[in-house]
Amino acid sequence: MPPIERVFVLMLENRSFDHMLGFSGIAGTDAATHAPTKINGLTGAESNSWNGTIFRAATPAVDPMKADPYHEFSDVLEQLCGQSATYPSGGPYPPINNTGFVSNFAVDAIPNQPSAGATPGGVMQCFDKSILPVLTALAEEFAVCDSWFCSMPGPTWPNRFFALGASSADLDHSPTTANTLLWQTIDGFKFQNGSIFDRGNGFKWRIYAGNKIFTLAHALKGIHIWDVTRYSKFAADVLDPNYPAQFTWIEPNYGHVTSDYLGGNSQHPLDGVTGGEALIKATYEAIRNSPLWNSSMLIITLDEHGGFYDHVAPPPAIPPGDVSQFSGANQTNFPFDQYGPRVPAVVISPLIPRNLIDHHAYDHTSILATVERLFGIQPLTARDRGALDLLSLASLPAPRPDAPASISLLPAMDLVQRQTSLDTLEVETPPATQENEEIDKTRNLPGFLYVAGKTDLEIPLQGLSLDAHAARVRDRVGSIRTRGDARDYFEEVRRKTLAAESRP
Image 1 (cartoon, rainbow, N blue to C red):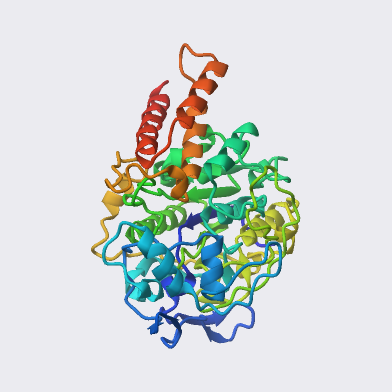
Image 2 (image 1 turned 45 degrees about the vertical axis):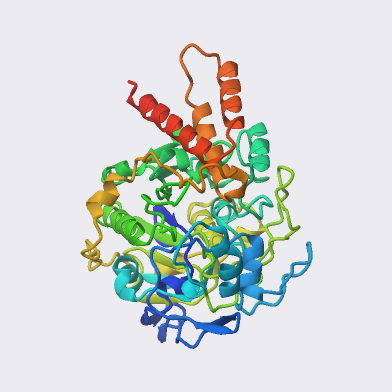
C-alpha cells in the first residue's frame, strides 16, 4: 500500500475525453507494461453524419458553446447508439456505435435553446492541446487515464452521486421537482448503504465548494451547510501539516445556474474552459506547495461527457445492486449495467512516475475503491467492490523531487478575476425569453433549487421556532415556478448565508 495519507478529488463538468484530449497526441509510458505508448485519441477520420452531411472530429473547439449539448438518458442513448435507437425498459442496452452525437445536437438541443450561431458539428470539435495548458501539462507530468468512463450513460446528478455513493440510488435523470419533494421527506438524497461521508470509525473528510449554496454533495442525507467550506480557504487550509481530512471533495462554482452558467469555473460548455483551467491550477499548486504534498493524491476528472463526441464505445458495467430509497427515481427501468462515455481523468502524486498513460478501465467508483482500500473502509455497493483502484500508479519508493511547483496559464486567462469569483453568486438575470420558463423544463434547476432550500432550512431565523421556519421554507420553495422566481430565491439564500457566516 503506498504511503498516501490524503486523497483530494476535483470534479468538473460536461466534457468528453476526445473533446478535451483527443488531439493532444500525448505519448508516454504504459502504466501496466512500462512500454512506450500513446493515448487512445483521434486521427481526424472519426465522423458522424446527419442530414446528408458528414461531420468529422477536428480542431478547433467552439468555446464557449452557443448551445448546451443535451445529455439526459435518452440523449446519450441516441449519441451512443444512433438516431433510431430505442431502449427497451429494463432490457439490454442497444449496440453502441457512437454515431448519434451530431443528430442529437442538431435535432434536440439546438432548436430548444435561445441561442444564435450554434452549428450541428460543434459537438465534434475538439481542443488543441495549446488551449488547455494546465490539464495537458499535468497529464504529461503524472498519469492520464484514457479509459475512464462516466458511471452511467446520463447526466450530471446521477454521475456525481456514483462518485460519492457507488450508486445513484436508481436515479437515471436530472432530478425533477417531484423528486426533490420526496428528498425533503427523508432529509436529503439517500443511498441504501450510505455515502463515503457516512463511513465513521475515525474516517475524516471535508467538502470545499466554489459556491456553498450550489454544492451538489449537500443534497445528500446527513450533509449540512456547515459541512461545506468555501474554496477560497482551501490553499490556506492545506498549509496546515495537521490537515485532518483523509478524503477531500472539491466542487467548482457552477456559475449562473438559472440561465447561462457564466461566471463559474466548472468548465460548463456555455461558460468555456478558462475558469476550470484556473481552478485546476489553483488546486494543484495549493497541494503541491503544501506540507501535505509528499503523501497526497489528487484526482482531477469530469462528471460526464456533456453531449460531446467520443469515439470509444463504453463497456458494460457492474450493477450496484442496491435499492432506490424514493419512488420515481428510475424513469427507464435502467439496471445501471452500462458505463457512459469517456471523460478526462488525471491522477497526480509525487509517488507517480512521470508521464504515465493508463489504459485500464475506470469509472467514478474507482475514486471510492481507492479511498476504501487505502483506509480500510468496506465497499458501499457491488460497483465499487469490483472497481479498479488507482493505488498501483503510486509506485515510486520515495516522492519525486522534480514535480513543477506551478503550471502556466494562457496569457488571456485572468486568474485573479476567476479566483475572486470563486465564492460569489452574482445577481443573474435570465434572458427575457427564459424568465418565465417553468423550472421543470430546465433539467438541472430543480436540483439546484433543492440544495438552496436545504441551505435555507439549515440557517435558523431569530424569532421563529424550527417548525415554523421549516414551514416557511417549504412554502417559499413551493411557490417557485419559473427561472425568474428561482433567481430571486437564490439571491435571498445567498444573502442569508453571508449574514449567517458573519455572525460571531
